[in-house]
Image (tube, rainbow, N blue to C red):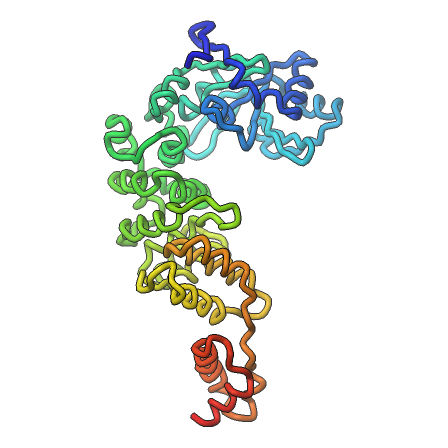
Length: 429
């Protein structure tokens, strides 16, 4: 890059077009507060990648030579709210104008067991960078626009390479979750679909050898990574490479015959559409439905990997209501179909929940943005018959069955049949 000039073997001066994120008022303020008291502080992590890729960072994290108690003192003296979010790892969250900024003391991993690390604080920026997983995550930027790059992360970023810092096997053994992070970061850096040729074959061999250790990681941490992979850019191709290494087998999916073709259909239907601010993004739990042929399989795995109740029920809703591509999207009939699904599942007090589920169903089945917006804005009618209406007309044990039958008749009438007409239909049949 012409506007990035080398200063030394490990540092570069960023041109003006990269410095705008450094001038955001809260960022300037944080730099000033720490530097005035003699501490070094730099932007680290994903924000550095974003800046170098000319993107405005969503989150800005910092590392500093200040110890945790010194971070608290800096905050106290400058009237900054400080929350101890990860004190065991030296991390504090500074809250400024309603936005969060994580500040972490420079550290090294003193002990690792493949899951967690015991840390020791340091003032050595390179040693802190050594403990990070990927070269593109080991860079930092100071307030004067100097990029510090100890492991060639800038060149890896420019050439779309995902590389571990130094020895891949050692980095992975420190935390086996880094296997999943390796694949999660591919679409953040790459510019094309993934294949075996996209990755270093030596690294893939190491990953395949060490993948069984993923079963030692908490299922919550595993799902946090997998959920981002499933919805990320180039996801189907990344997932196929992962499956060829048997990674899913050790993430709780060992009892399933995974259908990646259906997942790919769902993914492309949900993501290959024009951006529309008012159309929600597809959720990972919605795409997960592609891997299940029935509700029993879904329930078993969702509990095994400890999905939230909302994620689990959304996945189940899609399995029970998907059309398996038997309807032609973009037609009046398809819109009628989704309205029927919404109304059929409606229950008092849960309208918003079922609307979210139907929108997710429409996304993975390829409904148009226009139809999704119409469903969101549609004021769905409420079924006019209740169980109390049927008490005088039938045995109590048959009320549920008859209500379902009348609801289907009501949907068939396109919601025009009223209470009296539906009860009359029951009496006549």
